[in-house]
Image (cartoon, rainbow, N blue to C red):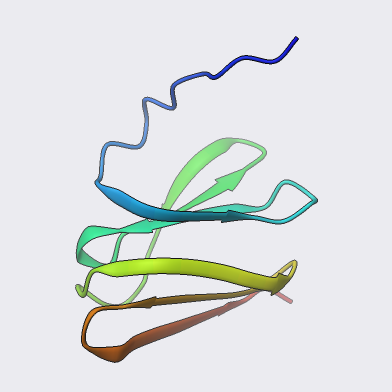
Length: 79
């Protein structure tokens, strides 16, 4: 069966998470925090902002948007 498992490597306050069907997962939070899930586990990503991020959503694998405080809009595109 399935069970919830803690992810202890992520300690930042987070507000939103989005994942694609292929296992690509992003979580966003305080001070521009973005975490991305890879085959090797969770990795902190450089967002280029210190504004809080409140939502994250993707249209397809590699095309993800995060939005937050003061009108912050970030786009992640992986070719």
